[in-house]
Length: 157
Figure 1 (cartoon, rainbow, N blue to C red):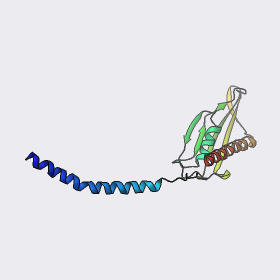
Figure 2: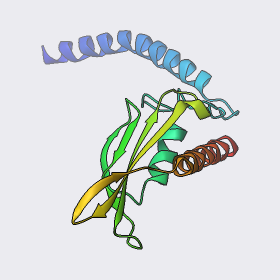
Figure 3: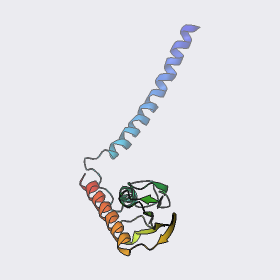
Figure 4: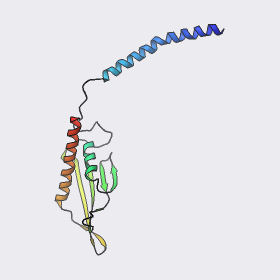
């Protein structure tokens, strides 16, 4: 009886083998279509490259520009970066806090909004003080320049 069951099992295995080879062949053909000699170019807007909700170049450039400040919140899906108060060691009587909002998935100047708060020490307490407009503009320029550099290097690479 055991001699009859082995050939019967072998027959069933051989009958299934062509179907398995056919499926394997279809899978190989499907994968061969993916293998192209041309390397895909980076998307200029970077909107399809990552899973974050905003432009990845602006996001990374913002984190780079604010890397010297302690982060309070960084929400990549909403595109908001909030730093904690930072006091320059060269000027401990003044501190800054920055909020960066990335508003779009495209790399554009109007997709970036930077807001800053400044406080100065007076009589042992921190008092709000005005922030020069040039400070915010300079930070926006730094972030946009870095984002463009990141995009250029991604396209060349």
